[in-house]
Length: 286
Image (cartoon, rainbow, N blue to C red):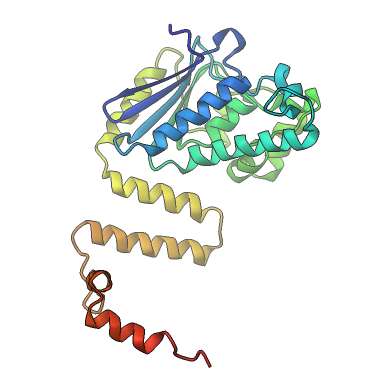
């Protein structure tokens, strides 16, 4: 096993992010969190990667943020404890940006959960598209018993998945729940026998590889955006996605559209562009 605390590997069009601090249940130190941010950005920039699998080393997924380091969250870049609550808020915003970037990737993301997925580890799963867990896995938000509250999904994304009442139960009580309950509550997708996790992830990847990848990207985008808005706005996303689907499948021409002529005419400052601008630029400006 590599000594790196995060291992980003690529095979064909699939990237794997391995959290590798198994002795502490892969909890997210500041260093590991920064490496995870960098890994997500590397994946984001890639046009070759279509799928991302996130997993933990040593039979465990992730025990969340490293609470032993939280006193350092208020430090400045020189290690001086001068930032206080503002420094904590700055780091929380960094982690929120990380989760938002993970959720917004134009790739399909899969969390392979084994063992512990609590706190920030659970928040990672909620930012991914699919979550497959072993029967022995447990999950929860135990921050309350350390006098803390979640910062990057434990109340916000969770309530969107399982509702306000159950989110209060998870966060205020702080119990560690069985994996099956996460599936029953629509937080995760599937629970598999302890020795079948890798096999199930590979089976899902095999299925996803056969899909129209552009359609998958569009579906992910409109579902994520649609869930955060009203019905009619969400239907607008669906309508525009339908038009884009038609266009990329060859039905792109619309008789009264420019079909690229407007852009080309602008580039050469042609007569069409000149006429349009001459009529428009001073219209109703008095």
